[in-house]
Image (cartoon, rainbow, N blue to C red; front, side, top):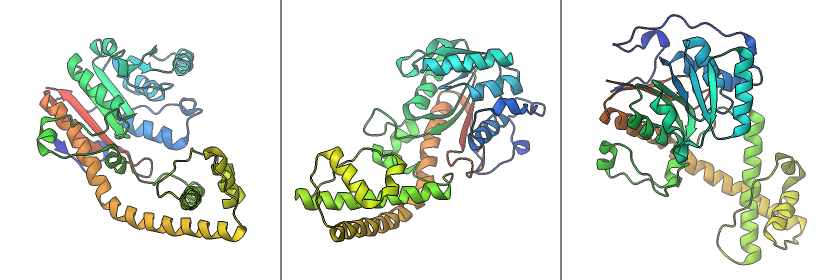
Length: 329
């Protein structure tokens, strides 16, 4: 297995497969309705892979990636998606563009993607979360799929409370990771805009301030989870957030304006503490993610695949920019 911490498409190649011709750039209608950063991720992913027909697109959504692969790599694509409405929308688009892409309404976690994999030569998954991409790895190995290209995401979205390593090498390492540990691997903000980051910090101040307030009111020293809220609520200030959160949790919080300001300040101080802790944790974030990616790559190597780990796009497009490519030897 080779690990390339940085690369350009011209430097990367499989020894047993010749480089493809320069990919044809699609017309502008291909990216209609797709946010710019997401489309750039899809383009970068397509430029970095070497699939051959038939290609299974795992967790396809509306099949934007599969649509581009079918066009640029001249492959027939079978897109699997569990939301029927997305399948219908994707199929309508493929038919309109006369692209060799078909959709199946499938719950891959229930094994409904196995048949497609058995009839495929390649399988791709861009940012399939947690159990979704590990399921693809195991089922693709079982189906003897010849080529895989996977960009993992959201490692913590798994039904297991503790991480179960895929490879024998990782199992032998005796590294114990909880779901909270796994969250660290994706806890990074690089694509959010300035306004989005500011609102996120304001919300954290309000939540931690309310947490201190509810501990005072209820006289209990334990965290009380509060559901997600619309960003518009934050414009009403801390008092409006406290009123909303109190209603959500059935708490009576009648405090003076001075007391509310005091708890808001406590929330602000707690945010500073959290930021200091997270600044230390960030030193380990990328190393943990690489460990998890290596576990997936080693699982494929142990199953007889020639495996490569690459960076397929700049982190400004997405911090989840690892690409695992594997070809059956």
